[in-house]
Length: 143
Ligand SMILES: [Zn+2]
Image 1: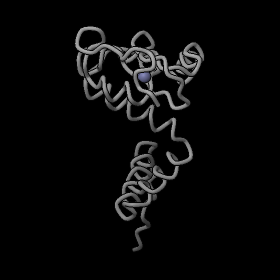
Image 2: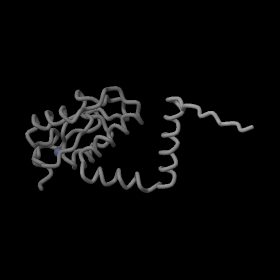
Image 3: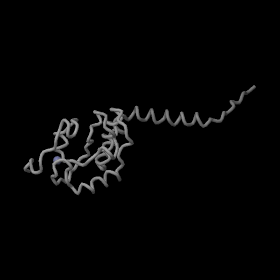
């Protein structure tokens, strides 16, 4: 007597689990591949990387706010007209500063960010604007 094995149809969930398992295995066997892909992506899109770092920081500090979209940030940059909000110096590399730092309870949204130059940003750090840190007067950084 021969017994024919009955083929059971895989359920949707089983198929999904199979796919998940397959990609898990792939990632385990190719640990550097995904990292390399990400690194290459961020090299091509450095502005995305900035967004990623900021979002990660916001999550880390449980900051309130919905984040800042690229469109909102472009608008803020346009209003700044290429000048640092703190020192007034022209710069083509303005950075996003949280007026009240995320580490001090500031929100990660459009109401709490301004474009500033690298010097002001690193000088201010996590200090609170006007209370712990005041911007230099115009022309103070003679360069
Ligand atoms: Zn500045």
